[in-house]
Length: 379
Image 1 (cartoon, rainbow, N blue to C red):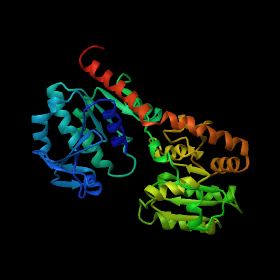
Image 2: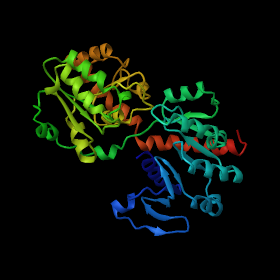
Image 3: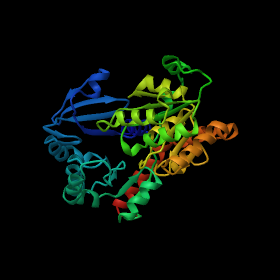
Image 4: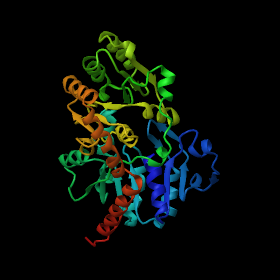
């Protein structure tokens, strides 16, 4: 969503925007019935002022793909661009395109999206990428875009020049909430009464996200009332079963709902009915799900290992250590102290304004201008 929202907002501001990406099986235009035109580089679509080119994929391993036509694109078309913005790491497209950027003196920025420090898997392969393809790719960037002050600090600690690192938060799609769902739809489906506090965890189910901590803290802070909804796809085999056992062992299995992944309208109805969002993650580059909850006016409790913490603390929620006792105290506060809850709920609006894509696009535009000026020797 980040690439789409930023691209469309840049186009609205009068910029010519092209997104170059690999084709992964069925594509976005097929689902939306957009017209796709064949080009020498791959299929091309246009929507809301943004051109998208899907390079044919010859080989794929997770996010890493082999796309030979990228060379043809760079040789014939790259010179028409003033700047290139790379999203993510650990692929071959970024290093390939950046090689031609350097040859043609086209400035580029990299947004690692929390991937610079490997945290979940494939540590050896990621290390090999950094030492080979990634070395020149990273070195040639004019700016590195961190999505939080926490990520910025990590990059500086890892030796990245302070002159290169700038911060631009992830945004939320405020337009999707101009007409929120009618409150009560999700509660009716799952037989949750209107007067029962609904606490929501919405994220991928992996150990790092801290759902296990939340179940234990919930059992301690709300032993007789409230409902806890744990939503999201299982990211580690067997982890969902371990969470279900944890809820049973804590004596709250009848009040903990595991609803699986939720998307689009179902997610909207869930957020509309939630009273509190909780993410006690052990590491989170930004915490997009917490930002979405705030955008819906739902106060949050997050850990101090979440990048969004600087926006949340005391404004739209509470920030705690990712451990049971701290979380249990925070849950009790939010369930009992109605003045505190009301103040934080009111603060969600101001935080959401800071995360509007129109505001963040304007900020990103200024980073682009600085990158081009730096590349041209103006600064």
